[in-house]
Image (cartoon, rainbow, N blue to C red; front, top):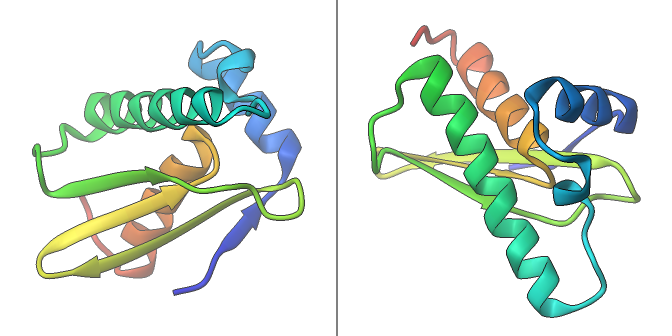
Length: 108
């Protein structure tokens, strides 16, 4: 599993077009704020993926990870019949899901 990075500009543009307030994707210095941001990040990504792909509940696990050198990043792994996609923003998580589907030549 490797972490892939994305352009910060792509992330910003996608946040604006997704209707997600940009402030919800900016991590704060406190642990509580980071936890809330992680929850908001995964919830936003789940909403997009559910709306676009009608994902079955419990088959895909979404998790937040820190950015890599100030850039959005994502990773994915599939084990025991469950896909886990991790990303530093909702956009990165969605991109990770897309990359998994593309890399494995899957259609939803």
